[in-house]
Length: 192
Image (cartoon, rainbow, N blue to C red):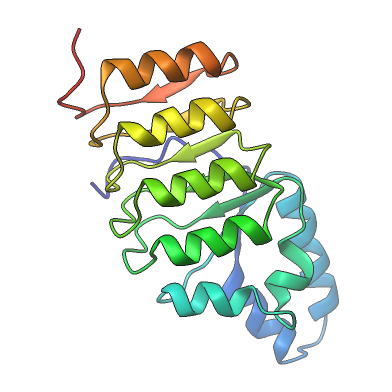
């Protein structure tokens, strides 16, 4: 699974842990580095949370004093890459979606502990969502129904190796008129 690229595209990436370390240590030029990182994210760069990410880590990012909460959560073009963080659950994704209503892209590929509940919260709380990768997650056709209902700005979606049906794909396509890319390889419940 690691060799298959995500369906989500980003112009660049910001390594959040490294950035936080520089800013917290008040290293020389830290303000300039933070400003450059913010510009990168505002222009479509992805925020990579490159630590042993679990629910506690995500929830700590959402505290009032964190760099993420103060500078990144309110960005209207936010792109988060949480690929392969298997310790993240619906609880963290729910809180993250509430704190980041400007989320446009989220990569949850191989986050095996999330369910349709996470997708529902993202869809309801992030009205400008354009791209989501749920490949190899434990989500069902219900996720496509939720995205079709609440996320009508979707352009790209990845649901490789998820339990989705013809009916759910049809609903998504009827409601998400901007959809250009749908990655659904290894979805054994789909028919021709």
